[in-house]
Image (cartoon, rainbow, N blue to C red; front, side, top):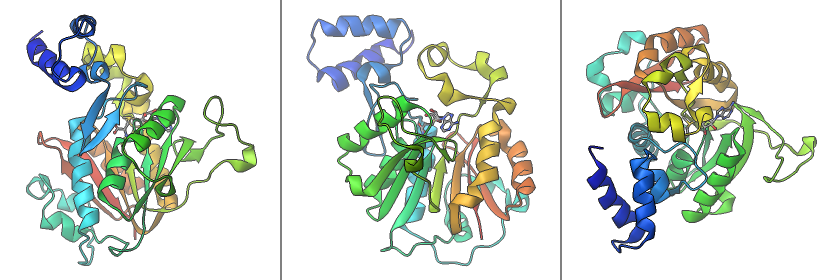
Length: 300
Ligand SMILES: C[S@@+](CC[C@H](N)C(=O)[O-])C[C@H]1O[C@@H](n2cnc3c(N)ncnc32)[C@H](O)[C@@H]1O
């Protein structure tokens, strides 16, 4: 394993505070067997937040951290220029490598700085995106939505770890946007008590977007250890993206924005969906590896 020594150093530093104990031997065996380092350590940093991974949600990816950081900057420093129509005509790579005044100028955020900013972290997993928003934007409130009970519990853990006030968030079991009953060890409620989603200034979505055909291209450790429900989607990976674009308008406030992660090769198919659902303004952006990775859609 090429990076084994490096990984052992990180394990020692982040889990054992550089003290060698008998337990580390077992962890090294786990590493050699291909288990992801972040699961063995049990947590990961994400934009200055500690994200506990003990319940095994998807491990937050650097690409997600990259765009989440940019959206936080955008929301913190709203631009008050008039938004102008976006779309394929403006898909100039030179404008899209990183967030620059050109992108900022295409967006004007709804809420003035001191107003509450309502956000939905859809497909929230560990809660990394929404927790980073809450940590870095004091006036933000976030609803977390995921179908996986394990993730819903993990989000609760992570909100506590990061000392976020319960008045600033809700954790809602959903099937995409559709709220579900809280059942099992999460908390029983009557159907009439299902918590509805609201309308939001910002929706953040990192849906499962890997097509089943691409399963074999994934690293073995991802396939073996990470939750498949977080990774795979029907329709060549487009099912959840399609559903999100189809329904997002209903959950966005006027001038609201959707931030959506996708896989680079899906850009053209997503453009078709944006037109099909009659959005007028959008912008594709690249990740830190110069690959198309995330999209901002703004409604009027
Ligand atoms: C790619 S992960 C994103 C996790 C996290 N937001 C991140 O960026 O690391 C996708 C998440 O979508 C959730 N999910 C899968 N199907 C869903 C559905 N039908 N409704 C809501 N959430 C779903 C999975 O449980 C998983 O946590």
